Structures are given as structure tokens and as C-alpha cells.
Image 1 (cartoon, one colour):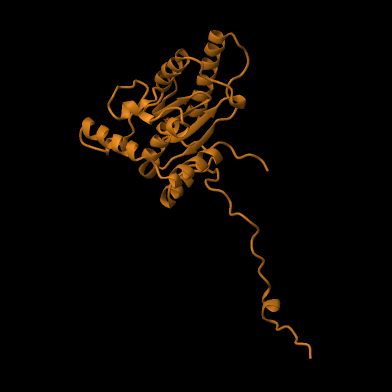
Image 2 (image 1 turned 30 degrees about the vertical axis):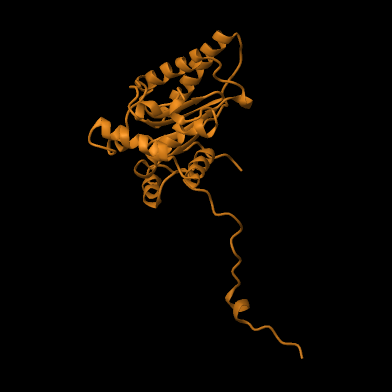
Length: 242
């Protein structure tokens, strides 16, 4: 079966995961993480992609972004990959590729899933046991959202502004949600959507999205369709042997 094209719809949030080839280390030192953060900070200016959340981990990184047009996301990720690998190889005396050719991606219903996806990303280091708690992990946007620092890479999504009338209120509410965490069922739903490339949202969101792309948004039903007998065979009684 032919692989579906990546789902990308401008103006909507996208959750994406980029992994290294064969699980090799993609970040070996603080300078690697710092260089990636500097690239993310300039990504929006160069390619008109707004970054709402991120987490950088040893063999992968996760982003929540909104591209401005149909090609912005692919162009941004290609440029980011090339620039990072070139600098990484130079610093560590290596050659060759680093990232898998195809990043995983899903389009997100902002009203219902923007904040859960942001937390999904920022809590990932804790779920992966890279840190005792998510807030102590230095290479994610969580500390920005709870008010511990201002991150130049982050563009706040309007859904974040709904958390409170002042920055203090928004940061306190975001911290409360991060400490509460996500239900395992929600984690699995988000993970499944991004791994398989299906849109993440409710029925009305999917209907809205269907007007903007011809790409299938949800998986086909599993299993063969049930056979329906013709009317004659369905109503003809079976003879009884005497």
C-alpha cells in the first residue's frame, strides 16, 4: 500500500517528532543543545513557522509549531536538519546523516489539544526518565511556560492566553496543569496520532479540516465489510429434512 503524504495544513498547530537514525546520539554536549535552540529561535523569522513548545532529547526532538503556508513546515525542517547536522559533524569530527529522512507529524485541534500536546512534549523527558521531574530538565520549553525564564524561541499560542488575564495567572495555571500531568489514555492518543499521521481532534474539527485538504484524516475501519445476503436468500426458508 502506498504511503500517504504527510498531513500538513497551514495555520493549524502541528505536533512533530524528529528522531535520529538507529537511535544514535544526536546531542552529545550542551553546545549541541544550545546550537539547536539558537536555530529554533531563528526558525520562525526565516521560514514563518511559529514554535509553541519543544523538548530536545538525546536521540530526538519534539516540536509544536504552526506553519504559515503549505510548504513552510517541510522547508523549515529541511533547513533545520541541514544546518544542525553540518555544525554537529564539524564539532564532533564525524560525517554522514543524523536524522531519519521522514519526521512524524500530526495536525492538532487547537481548542481541545493545543495545551495537552504542549504538555505531552514538555513532560516527555520525565516519562523517558531523563529527569526526576520535567521542570528540572533544561532542554524544554516548560520553564518558559511556568515563568522561570523568557524563551526567545517561543511564540505563545492564543490558547495559552486563555489560561489567565495576567502573565502570572497564565504561568500559575500552566504549572498546575504540568504538575497534574496527562492521563495515560491521553498520552497514548496523542502518541498514536503523531506516529501514524492522523489528525488529532473532535468531529467538528475534522469536518473543518476536511474542507482544507484532500488527504485522509483518520484511519479506515479495521476488518472486511460484512457480507449482506441478497433478499431472496435472506428470506427463503431452509427445507427441513424429515
